[in-house]
Length: 84
Ligand SMILES: [Zn+2]
Ligand SMILES: [Zn+2]
Ligand SMILES: [Zn+2]
Image (cartoon, rainbow, N blue to C red; front, side, top):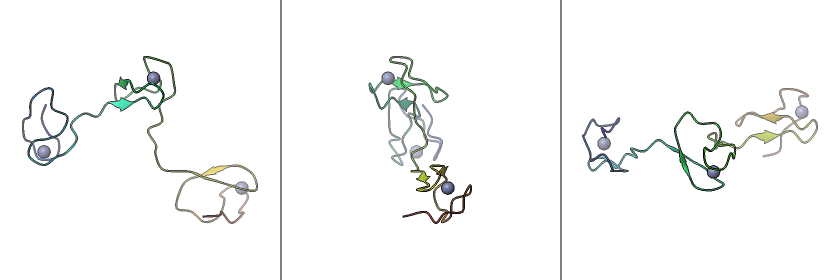
């Protein structure tokens, strides 16, 4: 297991780089059952739960319900000012 950050070769079973502390495992953890799935998985191969990899909270428009990307102030659909 080679660290992508500093290039140090760690043990295959290592979860964190011994040199820089970078997390080596990029598997997606299922938030439903805790199973580790491959990084490209969309659904958990253990329970079928949809894996959410985008942890940035979306800003739901109070007016039309559209989930706007974070960091914007006005709804891109109806131009309603979004509450923080
Ligand atoms: Zn490292
Ligand atoms: Zn699962
Ligand atoms: Zn809206």
